[in-house]
Length: 98
Image (cartoon, rainbow, N blue to C red; front, side, top):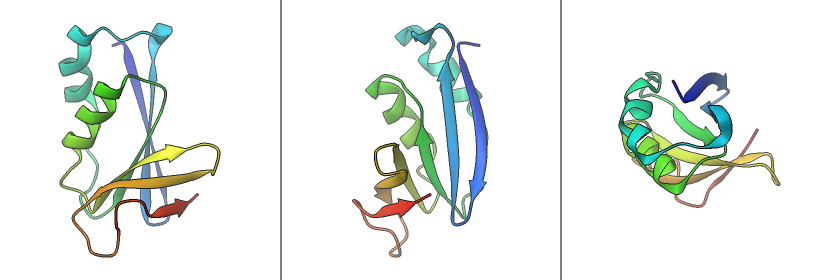
């Protein structure tokens, strides 16, 4: 599989780390990668962390839309930035420190 995933629960959120083996993901591999991304409980915020194309982030954000919120990791802040939410506690742009 060209994408490896790791799950790290942290307080109110779950960090989903991914790494593209060889550093390049062909768009033809997107469907398989998203289908193989691990299941995550819906009662958490998912924070996507890794280097990859925008279309991979978009597909993963859609996969985890059922969670409280989806965020992306911002290494310069060591925090997760909320990009979508179904829970009024979390708003787009919220900063969740790690």
